Amino acid sequence: MHFQWDWLCLGVLIISLVTAEIENEGTLDADVEVEDFDKQSQDADVDRDKSSLEVVYQTPKPTGEVYFTETFDGGLTGWVLSKTKKEDTDDSIAKYDGRWEVEKLKENTVPGDRGLVLKSVAKHHAISAMLTKAFVFDDKPLIVQYEVNFQEGIDCGGAYIKLLSSSDDLNLEYFFDKTPYTIMFGPDKCGEDYKLHFIFRHKNPKTGEYDEKHAKRPDVDLKKFYLDKKTHLYTLVLKPDDTFEMLIDQLVVGKGSLLEDMVPPVNPPKEIEDPSDKKPDDWDERPKIPDPNAVKPDDWDEDEPSKIEDPDAVKPEGWLDDEPQYVPDPNAEKPKDWDEEMDGEWEAPQIPNPKCETAPGCGHWVRPMKNNPKYKGKWKAPMIENPNYQGIWSPRKIPNPDYFEDPHPFKMTTINAIGLELWSMTSNIYFDNFIICSEKEVADRWAADGWGLKRFVASANEPGMFSQLVTAAEDHPWLWVLYILTLALPVGLGVLFCWPAKKTDEDIDFKRPDRSKIITKEELKQEGEELEDYELEEEKEKEDTAEDEDEGEGGEDTYNEEENEVADGSLEEGYKSNKSASEDEMKEADESPGSAGGPLRSVRKRRVRKD
Image 1 (cartoon, rainbow, N blue to C red):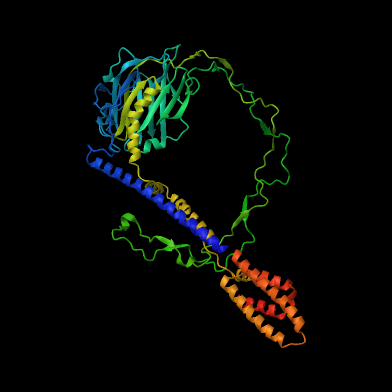
Image 2 (image 1 turned 90 degrees about the horizontal axis):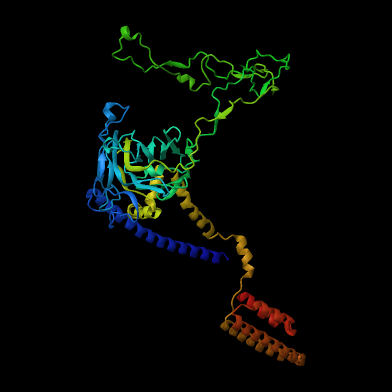
């Protein structure tokens, strides 16, 4: 049985090795393709006119009604740089003099595709463009979509856009931070605070003033979108039913209602606290008070200290009472430029006393402190329920004089321009493929022709799985332990279950009685000849005995017939099953009438010795 299990385990290992080899060949082919992509990417760094992957790029074209599109493949046509200054800022940095360029991506370049790149660090940037036609918030959804790539990561800065409110006095050359906008949307980051803004300015129907309403922070982790240096697609969808969705790479990261999920809420509360209401002087907010009937016990001593000297402590043997813990450094030398008149008398620096290193301690021995069993501290009366408790006081409610109800906040101020007004401490922020429309299918098709192609090129240029594992382990060294355990576990299990077990003496002794030898046709024939020779010798001995001749002949005939039957049966058994039938033949011989004779017993003994 052990032999069969050994071969089975060996077969399993061989099959596993063959399968692993096939997978390695497939992985090798994939790695070759990745190496080709990496090589092409390196060539693109040297020569920007060559792409990291041979793809055919065509400038995306809208497939339906749109309010604005921009690919920047034709430059900055239609865009206006701001010439104004930022208010309430130092004059040295107040001017919007940040530089913009239209460039290719630095990595995973798509030939022919270009985008708008923020180039300056620690400067204010402002650029804007008019929409093809104004968007009126009526009965159609608003879909705003564009691409961002933080090509050098991001330390502190934003990549959001503003949809500017329509007005007669809108001048894009004077676009700055105070220019009225209807919606602000996009990523923003400073420090470890990763945000995805969605802000809209809501007009108070009673006062006519505008207030900013901020969407609640998404529940997903946004960090990777800012640090992976990949192009990501940001989408905002506003629907006439007063709901919204925020998507990154066409996956929803935040959604909600304009009425319920904005901070502060669009509609103010119907009631507010009365600002003139004041808490009465006799209002008792204490749920529990000290028991006025409690009395300090007579044996309560408040003067007992919390710690006392341990009276059972004994000074360790070998304690050096006369040795100080620190001594002047004998190897220290006074600096040559030491001026005793200016610096005072020079003293060698103190070092630990070398004699104290081998002793239990040095200096004056003091008994250690222990907790005082008699200490109880300052006595305080136990607390009981306050019979005069009136609860936590709060001002009374009054109707909100500023209350209003806007049932459809989707109906915002019309927009007729788009602008980027940014400050960043990181350069080379890439923007591309802006679209404003009302149909999701149009936005999806636009994304497929632009962002989808960039994503394909980036995926093709990604390193192989092994390189990704090594890179991940460099960032998180504890992953090496996981890798080693993952590789060692199957090897250990294979050795444990498939390695041949050492046979013990008990196994050998247990199996020895079960051994049987297969009797071939030639061996049976030889035994038959030996039996015939023995019969002839017996016949001669019988003839010499005259007294028992008749009985001997009858017995001998019977004996010969039995012996022949035994031999023939054994021969037939060998032909049919090719197994050892020595035990069955001995049993038949014992049951035959002549089993008591000596000749057959001799034959059986001879067979046993031969086996």
